[in-house]
View 1 (tube, rainbow, N blue to C red):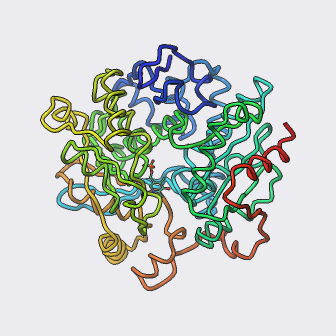
View 2: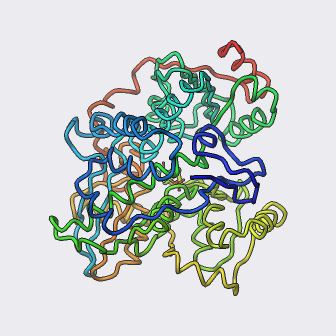
Length: 487
Ligand SMILES: *Cc1c(COP(=O)(O)O)cnc(C)c1O
């Protein structure tokens, strides 16, 4: 399997070569030259597999330069009930991604696919835990080390730290805005005592943190000498690891043992979206031949993607027009993985794609209204909708009273929009992207009581914290890195 850039750079690379990198040399994103196809017979033969072995089957089709026995060992080490279920229930035998039926609405079975049972209670653990093990494996093979530099407003940073803690050859330098994260998020990150994890609380806002990461990364000499890498959402390995749970969700929702349609049954997925990484994985699963009917993109008030899928107009917003909402992990106005879908929509015409994204930089967007490409969007199964704070509150209340289930604010955006696309007889699977414990303020507002908190998180706010407060100053942060890498 060779990878190419969405902007046309001619230098095919292998999975291992792009694993530790970010953007392609021409500024594009890496994509496989073609999508491996999965037949209906193969799908049926996967029904009995554990999540770890299903992950092996899917991933092995994308990374054929990792020996099969090594890849299988990596997926088995990553996808264990101890890592993915302890946080919530302490049940070491439970499914990695349990499918929970809410009920029948308008003749459609409505499900939640639980992706938030990992160490940081959000779906990012699904891919990040694998990434930690893949990095450690690849670095050991090459006798290398890696210093991950990142900026976080909460979820990504903690998922990365919990995935990389204690890993040989890896250090994490994570910038977060000082005193701007929730007490729970702060405690989750800052209570880690592992010597390879460095929390830097920057006196500023999230954008300042992001700007510092960009400034450090654009100093190529520093970046090479300090072996700086990233784990941001354009990382191909993260996207491909997320493909696996679409297969799992389909297998569970069509399982004849639970009244599902069995072979060939079609299933729709609704995905609370920000950077378009999660739903891009669903698109890839569909391109591999998984019988997905609709891919429903759910946004919050930051509705750039909803606008595009409804109208064909892609118009990115400035930071000042990006709202701070009660589903904060979706407060994004420039979805970094969106280019991957556009590449397929344009039938891999890299020249045309490069022009469109030059228009994004120069004019703030592009317009596909009235073009043949716009007509093709529906062929890819995409539809969309948006949800607001009052929708979230109403949906959280409704699911609590109707089904006795408490969902988080992002998942609530998903359920709200999924209900606009139900079709009799077609299961609708909403991806649960976080647990309500992470967003206690909004749960209190909706339900008048605290969300349930997994036992292992009781009292984390009072654990000792390890972090350093720094100025929003590039040189100061470079000095900190040099002091701690010794490079
Ligand atoms: C990151 C995140 C999202 C958005 O996922 P994308 O892959 O960026 O589209 C949605 N919900 C939660 C809870 C998240 O952490």
